Amino acid sequence: MAFKFLVIALATCASLVCAQGPSRCEDIRVRRSAHSLSDSDWANVQSVVSQMHRDGQFERFAQTHDQIFDSVHGHSAFFPFHRRFIVEFENLAREIDPSFTVPYWDTTRDYRRPETSAVLRPQALGGDGEGPQRCLQSGVQGNWTVGFPDRHCIRRQFSGSGGAILPWIPAEVISSFMQRDQQLADFREHIEFSIHGATHIGLGGDAATRYAPNDFFFFMHHANIDRLWWLWQNDQARFFAYDGPGGSQGAQAHLSDAIPESRAVSFGGQQVGSVMVLGFNGMCYAYDSAPPPPDMYPGPVGNDDGSGGGRIKITPATGHKSNNMPSAINSGSSNMASRALEIARIRTALGEQEGLKEYFPKVALLGAPARMANAASPPVHRPYTHQYKCGGGGGARPQAATKQALVYPARMAEKWVKMHGFKPERVEKVYREACRLIDLLNNSTYVSPY
Ligand SMILES: *[C@@H]1O[C@H](CO)[C@@H](O)[C@H](O)[C@H]1NC(C)=O
Ligand SMILES: *[C@@H]1O[C@H](CO)[C@@H](O)[C@H](O)[C@H]1NC(C)=O
Ligand SMILES: *[C@@H]1O[C@H](CO)[C@@H](O)[C@H](O)[C@H]1NC(C)=O
Ligand SMILES: [Cu+2]
Image (cartoon, rainbow, N blue to C red; front, side, top):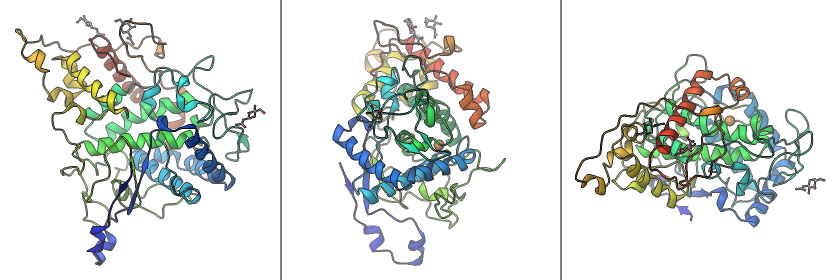
């Protein structure tokens, strides 16, 4: 699938205003799910990243991520910075191979037993580290030596014992965040403290440090985080939603903030507001499982400083708005067939429970399924008062069960929370919300399609 657009808008637009306005991409490249890459696709990835390695690019990216780490995690800049950072990497890769795009890794597909993921096979990203140094010996970066912060092999140290990775975050939890969160700050915290952190910690080694870009995994993981943000942005045309904490102490995030950069990887002072809409201002890519870029820039066209955005109401160009079809409701999963099932089953299983409105407000809007609505007696309204359980710190292995019960994710490692300077109670709150939702689903007739 390829999206090519004519530059009609630019052709009619030679004025100074237009020159300063958003510029439309001529070509839109498509990032594919890592699960759909063949061995020969991976061989191609290997030749591209090996060339970049020889050119010293991995050091540049690792060093930059380390330098600006504190302003791009735990702050609103989390999403826009990583979007811009990955585009930079992808652009360099495309100088080597013009057809290259960063594959995104939808880790919800592998959340139960991540170490069995096809993405971690030896022909792909490779598996756990080996030997006392935990050196990565398989995959596209097998036996590499990288130079930041010192010369070392790329390390991996899976979070579980015996080569296992503790469970990640199920798609249902991400779907719930997408439906509930109205503010970017809430969505950012939910994503950062769940799927984002869990995956970094799960692989361990370099991936769990401030210089994580040493491991190519970083780019694939952040492409997925970016995809989730793009889905959220599209959901209510919240393209310019940008609130919460800015990069410097006490400051409020603003669209005119410069994207954090370093001397090694610089964006020329580019503003956050310029990267909010895919298909414009150099964000020339799409995802194979998310709405394509809109045909017209949704605004704000306004202020030179990029301000004046706020929340706008437009109809997404994709028809991806709520039209009472369960499939139009976003899910954390990139698996198109399963995500329609997910929504339909949540709707049926939770019926009229209070938890449905609380966790899946979009599904609740669809009303009860016909079968229930026509029943002789209306469903009993059950308030959801359960606190949470998440026994034993989570990460328990799935039990053999008659239905596909969800699995609790592992808690965020304390070391990870400290490294970021996160408030432990905020991280714990997100974890409890995930567990409470899993209890709600597990206690209903819901059967996960994942
Ligand atoms: C890395 O080195 C080990 C030990 O010498 C070897 O068995 C393995 O095949 C190498 N891996 C790659 C991807 O070359
Ligand atoms: C889900 O419920 C089943 C019983 O219905 C129980 O055995 C299992 O431990 C529960 N799983 C979680 C994650 O709570
Ligand atoms: C599960 O449902 C039962 C019966 O409706 C209720 O008593 C129990 O508290 C629920 N448990 C959770 C974890 O929601
Ligand atoms: Cu990061």
